[in-house]
Length: 226
Image 1 (cartoon, helix red, strand yellow):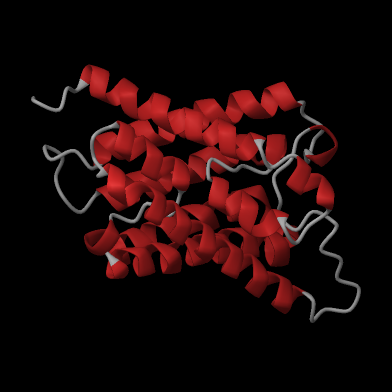
Image 2: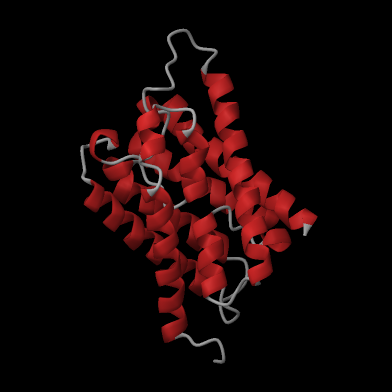
């Protein structure tokens, strides 16, 4: 279990550092497409690196969804989430430390945090943010459940999952900066404007609900006994 939790912590660190780091340091050069690819690539690379160790969840919504889908033992759920949160916060701290080395840096100016209304990149409402988080996380879990099914050829799941996360970011970065991952949201929100911590609840409730919905939807069309 210690190896699994260490892998989840390291993997989630990489996801937040790589994905949010691309938004903080390079968004002006690579744009939405580049940031979306960065998030997808973090998952692809870590899935190959730690998939055989922990399953490479990197996300409390994924862990909860896989538990609901019968793919994760209930006693592992909370330790997995704790390791993911720790990795995300450490990544946020590392990003803050590096970014603060530039004159004029101000973490209160977003810091790749997720938000709605005043915190949304394009002013989308709380209802819009909740809807997109639930919907996209549900599809994310649906793809994860399918791509990791025992009848699917091994070795391709990381690509399917990483490309799905890329697509998710292409859709929703303008809406709320894309979460679908409560740990990712927390990891940078604590270093950003207090507004984002006040809005953080949505980026736990929405992804967690969506993860369960997506996993149960997959179980409905592909019962475990088949």
